[in-house]
Length: 391
Length: 58
Ligand SMILES: Cc1cc2nc3c(=O)[nH]c(=O)nc-3n(C[C@H](O)[C@H](O)[C@H](O)COP(=O)(O)OP(=O)(O)OC[C@H]3O[C@@H](n4cnc5c(N)ncnc54)[C@H](O)[C@@H]3O)c2cc1C
Ligand code: SF4
Ligand code: SF4
Figure 1: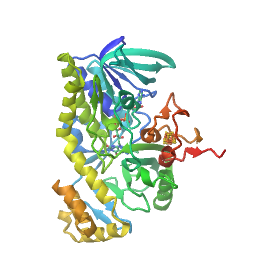
Figure 2: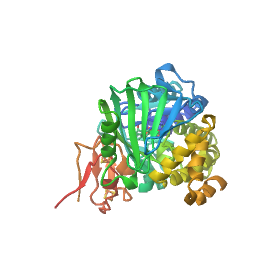
Figure 3: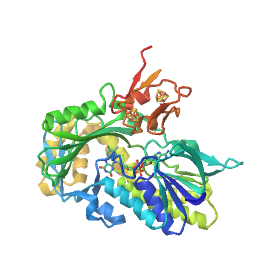
């Protein structure tokens, strides 16, 4: 632990560890500050990642993975199950181990890490320039200096606001979630199930992700607009009671996922935002693990280069915004439009769509054709489709 | 006034992310309300997945 680093990263989730690792690999001195007692705990996550996505960045270790899934079913409000025909290679991770290992990898490249360290403010010099952070360590106020601060502080992201970047989410742009890890359920561990229904999860979906044959992450996200008077916990209790009445509940966690429009401002002078804090999770699915790792990598690279070039101004750091837009921006924008269109479907429309899709030859039931069918069979959505596919 | 029910709160930060006035903060394992910033817009209450925020009756 030193009093000055090239880069201080706030938050030890996938975004923070990835940014720290990529900057440390480029020879920068990096410190990660994490407020919780442990890296990786609590797990506020359904732990699903695509195999291809993960392998682009990391060589998966067996201990990261609870289960490998091969198929997905989308279940309509009337119970009609649409099986996606193609092989959906995915993992249900063990995020406690996974997040811990990501931090360890950053440490192996030289990053320092502290836990139980709550960052409560930015540090600024006499000219108001950001030059570090203020934190409480075991209740004691401390400071550390850095040339760049990277905010990887998750959905709540207070740090960005302190830096003048508006990350406040509108109710329609946050999925409010509850998840239970339940035992004593009978599952086919090769299948991930997704339930779409305004009765079960308005403006979102229910997931059932098996960790083995009798253990699953069952949770749901609903649009922040639909969370009152009944809240996510009420919907989940009802779902588990009706679908898995014998389940024993081993964990219950709440959480929020930004499912928001593309955030085009992610830097200011000497400051960068990454991961959920920068609303980088996919707005249609809420998946953000791989995206956080990917963006973290770009963010860390640009930070390291900026320090090497002795220019950490907003202008220089904007290269990260540009590279991230090229990497993930277009998909993000398209996914947001799709989310808006899909969540506008009524239960009747979803049912009819499911029946139509099930008439397609099984080999044509790809995710893309399912969403296209969902949209095409609903005339009132034509204008949305045009927007989704043509702009 | 708002009442945070700490026995229910899971410290998930969802409410913090929607508060337009920076009146909520997760601080040292506790959700804190800065009353001077709060306009009682109730967005936080509406978004909490667990009903851990309620409107104080008085
Ligand atoms: C219920 C739920 C289910 C999900 N399921 C999936 C899924 O199946 N697949 C998927 O890909 N994604 C999923 N996600 C999304 C995924 O969890 C996030 O996108 C991912 O964790 C983002 O990583 P991050 O590093 O940006 O943020 P986080 O993992 O949230 O890490 C942020 C870290 O910053 C720390 N921190 C915050 N403020 C401070 C501070 N002031 N000082 C110090 N430290 C601080 C926090 O303690 C935290 O450890 C889910 C999310 C939820 C809520
Ligand atoms: S949203 Fe609810 S559970 Fe989450 S931190 Fe706020 S009050 Fe606590
Ligand atoms: S009522 Fe509004 S201003 Fe007050 S804490 Fe909740 S969201 Fe913030």
